[in-house]
Image 1 (cartoon, rainbow, N blue to C red):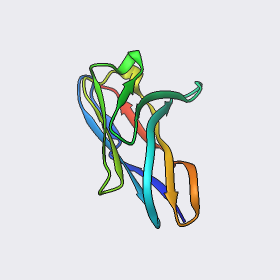
Image 2: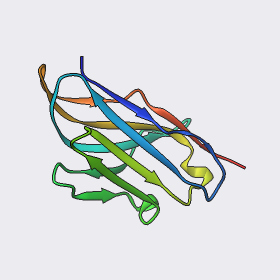
Image 3: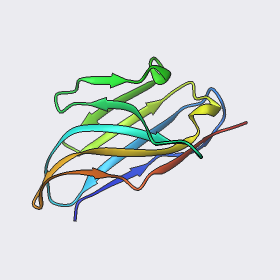
Image 4: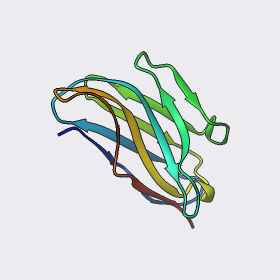
Length: 119
């Protein structure tokens, strides 16, 4: 069974930092384009950042200069370094991506992890 498992969330004060990790498990052959999304209470899920298989990154405007997405293909893991966090960054963060496994190729979502920015 293929799974994406997020970790690294929690409570942080405004201006602080967190590093989210998203690890793929199962019989994985490769991971393709990956992304981080987030969903705040009462809001729709929104895209935060993407990273292609060759490492090309894209960010939405509200995180540019503060968040960095990266990947380690040998560890089958994607990261989101979040700096200068603001209360409005509070949300459940989800990892998403294309994975090739013994079950074929498919798009998967993680279960989500809570990030709370509050003093």
